[in-house]
Length: 621
Image (cartoon, rainbow, N blue to C red; front, side):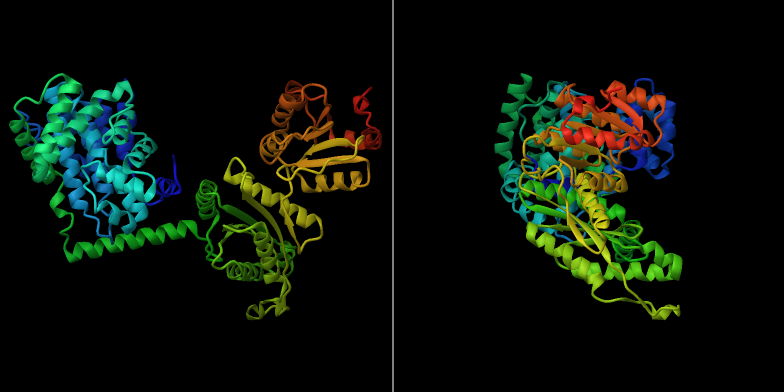
């Protein structure tokens, strides 16, 4: 089960990532027609990586008869799998050098165990002959990446838990499950798939502590990795060596029908080869960096943070930008839904903002936008975060509110602007201050009222904002779409569904039908139509615009036809009805298709038939 803690880890934006060269190598090695020359060319683009690979290939770890001077030749000598394993290994190591920075996490100890596990898997694979040695090496090197990810996302809170357990024992998983309701095997498998690593690597990450339910294609690889873990524990945990030896002998006999031949010799090989690989990975540098290098690292981190802030901040107001809002929305949405809490989205738009730019200039407009950002941030301080959504629109994300608190928050944001004018005296314009009001739309999700995706919650708030604009501005409206079903209407009223994303057109429909014997419901896109129908709503007549904010008119018609059948009349309209649009509408199931001008010319008759319930004659010749 994916808990809130688990989601926090796998969605953390600071997780180690594979560099571009490693991603390219993965893609190429998955293609059967990739040439060695093509692969070599990609690796040689990263000269530092190529140098490390050649240094490793020429080490005693591989024991080549003649020195190898090029990546091309290394590929010919050792093959794609070997070079791929080295590229991925060095890439993961280099991308994780700052993991745990500022915590008590022992990164050197982590990598020492990981390297021993990888070498152990390679050594045992030669003896057990059930899987490729290089695949065993890399999969085992990656098997504990869930620990790196968890340290990155949760920091000292996670380090404190795992430091009390043995990283190589199942007790580590038990401690993680007890504290966070997930363990590093779950995170490792998710991260392996996120990076599009071979599925066998994900299987090893998922099952190296629990080798049950393993896919058949990865069974021998997982079992080899587990056997290597037992062997490595014999080397690194001398006090329990006999216990691990017993487990190793029993499992290899049960799984492979044999025991590790000359176990003492195998352990010596693992130890000596691991020390060699430690030097190749420059493991001694971790944890013993000079003050100069430490200062350089801190500077690099600062540059990275500043760069990240620049990419997620609005330069005018200093608030988070649209990208930052999208990231936070996705995270808060999943967290609130998983925990049974709530999430409120409030969209605010400055009323008549264009007139400020037109009459007083863009300097005044910018001053107003800054002031709006400051006042809204103050209004929601401590309860949520405000973002500049674009133009004169601002969005507040507020988790954990009740509906009453959400309404109060929206009203507080509106009053924050309406309470006093914005001072623009420093600009030396004809006015020293200007009155600015806001319209706001609120969408709130909790309990069973969750939309399918986070962006739908923003769409709901946007619909409510349009409603506030149409009702006179300087007001707050609550989204009242499909999740708030209309009360049962008296028998005989015609139920009309209007699927239209143009707020002006929707307002005209409301005006025309407001006092008629017609029950009218509005949706702006295909997701809203789906929500309405799944809650039991059944229209008598449907009018669908061809262009919608999400999806198209024909797509909406297909959704409606799938639920209501062929009896309900559906009209597809468009500002300019072409033959292509007409054909698409008819194919989707529209009863009739017409231009909006044609509809307007017969609107009186259309409404009269709606009112009298003669829907079967709406478009009679």
